[in-house]
Each structure stands twice: as C-alpha cells, then as structure tokens.
Amino acid sequence: MGILVIAEHEDGVLKPSTLNTVTAAGRIGADVTVLVAAAETAAICTTLARVAGVSRVLAAEAPYYARPTAENLAALVLSIARDYTHVLAPATNFGKNFMPRVAALLDVAQLSDISAVVDADTFVRPIYAGNALATVRSADAIKVITVRATAFDAAGEGGAAAIEPLAPVADSGQTAVTGRNLTRSERPELTAARIIVSGGRGMGNGENFRILEALADRLGAAVGASRAAVDAGFVPNDYQVGQTGKVVAPDLYIAVGISGAIQHLAGMKDSKVIVAINKDAEAPIFQVADYGLVADLFQAVPELTGELSA
Image 1: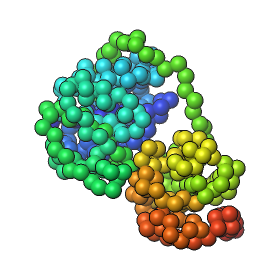
Image 2: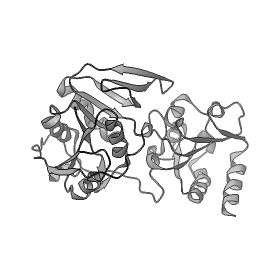
Image 3: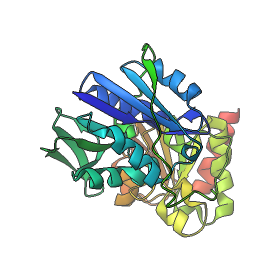
Image 4: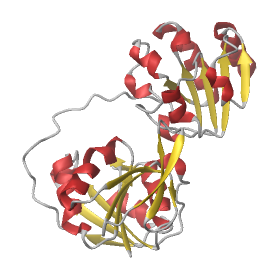
C-alpha cells in the first residue's frame, strides 16, 4: 500500500501543514512517499528526508513549479498517481486548488478535509460547519484525500528517507501566475500560531484592532478575526478564522468582541484553551469558552496588556 503526500511549501520553506499530512498518511500505512514540485527542491527535500515516517522523497524541478498552477501540479501528480493507493494533500488553499482536478481526472470521489483515519478505506470528516462528524468509506482504487491539518499532530524528525529525482511534466501553458498580493507580518502565521488573539464586530472599526495587536505582540501571538469583522472592512480577509476562512487549533485562542456564530466556531473550536471577552453575557461564544469574561473589551484588553507588560 503506497501513500503519496504532496508537499506544500513557499519560497523554499516547507509549510507545517505538510508535516500534519504526513502524520495522517502514516495512520493509513507505513509506505509514505512525499512529492516536492519546485524550481529548486534541494532544501525542502533535505528537510523532508529527516521527517519520521517518510520512506521516500520525490523531487520534480522546473521553473514553472516555482508558482505551480493547478493544471501543472495536477498533471505531475497524475503521472505517478496510479502507483499509489492514496494521494494526500493539506486541506489548505494549496490542496483545494489542485486536488479536485486530480480526483476528477482519475474519475474518483475526493474525500475532503478529513479529521481522523479509521482504516485505509474509512475516514472521518466534519460536516454542517463542524457541528457533526461523518464517517465515510471509499471503494475507489485510489483515494484522493485532503487533510485538516489542525486535526493531526505534526510529524517530528527521525527519518532518513531516500531522495529521488522525478521528471517534470511539460508546462501546459494554459494558465500562469502573474502576481500575488501577500500580507507580510512579523507575527506568527495564523494557521501555525500557538496563541491567537481574534476580534469580531464588537471591535467597532479597524483602528481598534490596534488594541488586539498590542496584546498579541505581548503574547507573541497571531491576530485573527471573525467573518463579520472582515466583511465590515476592519481587517484583510487573510485574518479570517472560520468555516470560510482559516481553520486553527492553537494552544490558546482569545476571542474578543466575537459573538460566536456557527461559521466562526467551526474554525476555532478545536483550540486547546478558549478565552472569550464580550460584554454580552448571552453570547454563544461563552458556550464553548473555557474561560469567559463579561466586560467592556475596550477596558479589559488594555488592562490585560498592561498586566502582562508589568
């Protein structure tokens, strides 16, 4: 039983979601191969070769893999997919971009956003905005799977996998990445942060997010937001946590001025400790919070930041 994991990386750095996906792959079977498609693969492959549970690393190098399109990446995966029983990728924007194409071209059903592995054919995935879990079984010869990274621990070091070259598939020429608008921050990446401070509609406006940023900087945390705050234009949409945003599971999640709509809870309720600050004692967020403070956030948050500074 061969399992293929497609590595997610950016600017020569392996994304943590790949390590979570390797863990999921290891629960299916022991023969795990990781495919790296990049303009330069050496550094990423060296990192992956040391990951526990990885048996082999395939390196496909071509200039058009620097910013791979769904067409080119899917074609590369298809060139070797029939040698494996399972093809996995993180259920991030990366995996969501090309894995449906892989499944369609293989004429199989994709198993999306799995959160647990029962056996090689059976998996658990959240449905209804995470309010229920469905156990699904696939009879397809090749299982195409995207993995909810926050549901699995990251694979550690301890491996010594062989690195082998893989011939790239010719550039399809159908599409090309012409540019990207990225938000750069010295704070941790939202999906990998151990601590997250998120704000909702209760923040009032974007300027008030500076209150949360001050707290986040004191805690070494990432800053997130609810969909309501993003839709109101308070912060960019890459801050959004929720069913239609990013799914996170930090050690500590501080929800400030967030009511706790279902779509937001779907993205953060797996956090190990949840702290809610809201002046509305009936806010749904308090039903999932480990600690709740009914207070005016504009008074409570600066006081908390001051105590941490002291």
